[in-house]
Length: 302
Image (cartoon, rainbow, N blue to C red; front, side, top):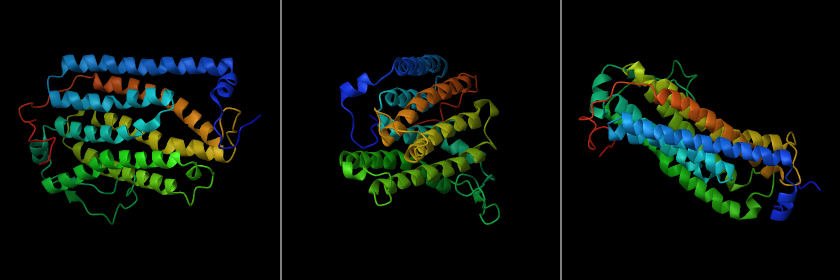
């Protein structure tokens, strides 16, 4: 009997309905997830041996941990680590500043370089109406705060959504126009889009002065793809299942079916992203000036 209601099946019913093909696929995804974790550990050893600057090494590891930190929990249907994405993006912001030699040296290099504000994903079409902004300490501080808001806002909204999920009435209908969950998800999307917009400004400005051997744009694009996967992919699968493009099964209703496809896809996607990140983070690059990367200098605004 097909379960298209919101009722969760009993464990024995769920296990009895799993086919051999599905079980084999689960084992394959488990191996993929373990491979992602193994790649991260290999990169951890490599960075520990080849990067002497602790600040750069730590932030590289925080960024790279995004992939196993999302991959393994999604395998067991525990997407609460979605909030780690904001932390990884903030760490990459700091890593970019470190590649440029620290806050003081970065602002020195960017004197005379104007920030282009007509970039995606918010203002890519406003090519004429937006002025250019000089990179000053005040502008840098504003950029940093706009990126850092995801570190606090995303976990808080994720927790509130989890609390509302415990109350079934907020998740019992496909039409969620009057559900507070919809508006919380909109706030999460706005938070991520704002962070991406500011980071795009920062990266495009940094490319004018950054050494190409850091592969800054390639590393940023990997983080960008991870953010898109986390933000848009669940919505796409929910729409496909809500309109019966992907039908429900005896094990899962429409919401569970969407989560099943989303989680399975993410296990494979994060493995591919981990492989891509490994290519760029293992490339040799000029070490930053460790003497200027002090606690009071680039990575922390007092």
